Length: 263
Image (cartoon, rainbow, N blue to C red; front, side, top):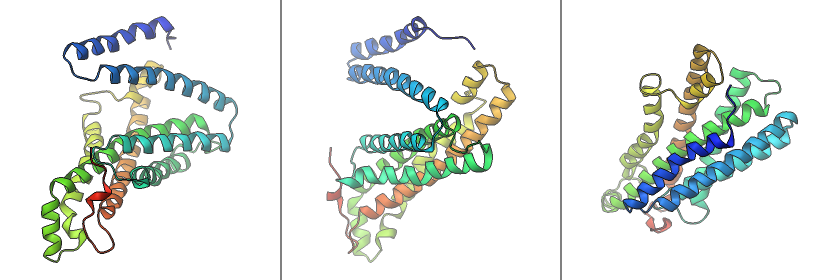
């Protein structure tokens, strides 16, 4: 595998700088955001590289659990930060975090124990990369699903309240919006699986091939990862949208849009 130097990364960063210049020239108002994201990418990935290098040499369940917990809490924050109308208070953060925990951690444990069968099962070489891929992709599905839910409820509030007045339960009144929201969360992973190998070579497969692994073996691992991600996304998005839709109504089944933060 070819070692990358700081100069090599510097050359690649020219592309990001070029994108920032184009964004500034077109007045897209994302130049600062793009540059900050690039800097965060450099710092965060180098730090996690150093942390993982240390963990690989000192395998301990406590340290692996601590890093997994940090990843979960940050992912939960990112879910809330991506909402146009997030829930007020702890619900905005809790909905995403709980859904990520129920989905990504469950699927990761299943993969480690039943499929990969690492020894020990919590070895960071397998546990952290798997959990990271699942959290990142499930986070996108949850963010899309919950955002579609809150936007749909806000836009169709008159319709929802009319259904409630006609005697429908809260579950029936928001049923169609909830289904559309869950469907929106599924779209990224469906597209990724449908396009894999034809339109694109997914990141993990590409990385393994560049590292010298057999293309067929890399393809098998990529199939495994995509199936795990699909399971996590389906579970996480469904759980988040169901919890969010229930939060939009009180115990008397009244629509409570005051529980959302308006932009």
